[in-house]
Length: 266
Ligand code: PDD
Figure 1 (tube, rainbow, N blue to C red):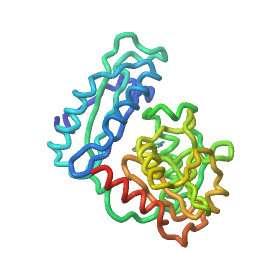
Figure 2: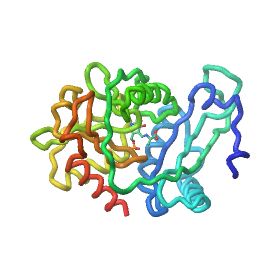
Figure 3: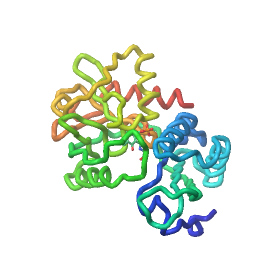
Figure 4: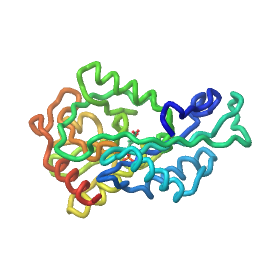
């Protein structure tokens, strides 16, 4: 429907409690990337919050495809959000609320040469279940705003001395001896779909991978750094907390992984 006609109740629990989960799936050449992996994560996020899928996978795929078609999306993303639905405001989950499901597209260029980003750390003040992809994104939004105010592009969030993730991406460093280090999966980070795909490709390239927490000091010593997300693929990082990496230009590992990822997705 036209966006002006798409409305949600003020009593929707997505609005009142951030009681909602979402997925962002990228589109290249009009085709969805890793759709099934995104749906599997959606099922998991919903399950952790005692919710079921509101529609089956095929029905969701059909709407995604229809939206890509109707909005003539060549490159961009499809967003889906599922909320627990509409109910009188109460901290207990309502028994029989009908879930709200919203989907829309955003066109944006995803492929091509990437400029490296400058990141600055900030405290990770998000809740303890970052593995569930909920719409409570204000802490990440605050962190990114703080970075922008310092003239930087994004923030790397730090908890107990170690980097968790970026504001909306998974984070990586490449050590001087060529190892890719990225935080291991747990409740502390989102299990990125792009992360899984990129780590698989990196392993196939014979690159060594260490899944463990790393500090900002280690990042400053790295030969390069990058981040991944469905909405931006592999994005090089050229500065961390004021220290330039790889002479302030995107490094060879991140550039190569981005190229391979795009090539493989076609
Ligand atoms: N964000 N970590 C966080 C906190 C994220 O929000 C995201 C994605 C990722 C990367 O996950 P994936 O590779 O599955 O996109 C990691 C989406 C793109 C967003 O909020 O727009």
